Image (cartoon, helix red, strand yellow):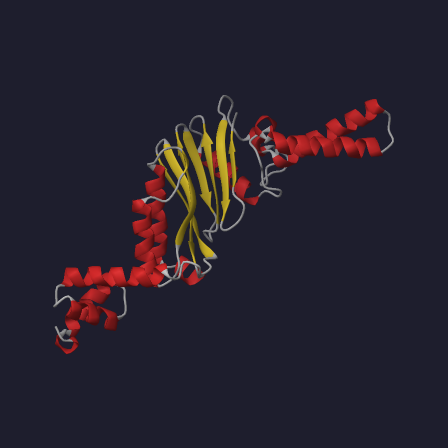
Length: 275
């Protein structure tokens, strides 16, 4: 079919279905002899081919998202090149859909699969930007609290052993997002051994350098370690909303924090799991 034979109505209908430029839609309809479905497929294949050559473009913006469905939950990050695209409703819908996919998967770190890649490709094709699934984690069992900051760039997910009130769940999650320094573990028992060893060696060295007797130096080192755990473990941190309380004071008796994730867009993700 000649390009001139393609009706403006059909070209506009294809544009509405794909979000791609009107002239590309007209050319696809001409190449597909007016077959709308075939033209749509041609457009997607051509657009994807162009985007595959642009994967090296920096995707420094994006969104984090959380999905909770009963005893299953996920926290994910998807990236885009510009904040304009990250704020696009289509991009945000895609992120929410991917969070649902991850939540239904096996617990643990989640890699992109065909369903996720298909969602990503739809956005890449229509926005003409490099987009990607950056990372994601799935959880199963217990109950969950979640918080996504209003800009969509930082989020926290907490897994409890049983249900807590919405106020407690949200409060703990908001603390994880806002606390400085960010919590690195749930409590001292699940702080990574290499971090504890390095901090203890540093504390002992500082105590010995003070010239105090060995017994006093040991107590000084123990005090430094207590302070370290108070500052860096979730349950022992002062609650950001009311520093007269510890975060552990918020959690009802008999309920445990099993895991938490703090995920900032493009930043270091903290994932802590109780031992």
